[in-house]
Length: 79
Image (cartoon, rainbow, N blue to C red; front, side):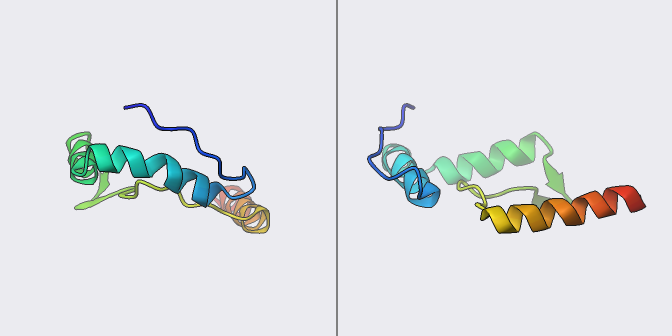
């Protein structure tokens, strides 16, 4: 599956991702179900829940990324 190029601004990663994903989902509407099955088959789960069931990544602003990084570094030192 080759995604079409998008004209969305690199400043808008969510829109860019959506434009890349739209033609793939149009060509293969059952992709989300297949994706979840592959994750479960690979045992990428925590209990009965897959680690990341989303086709779109979770985008963080630079400020949020900095805050998450600082918190995880503190937790790593504590651990």
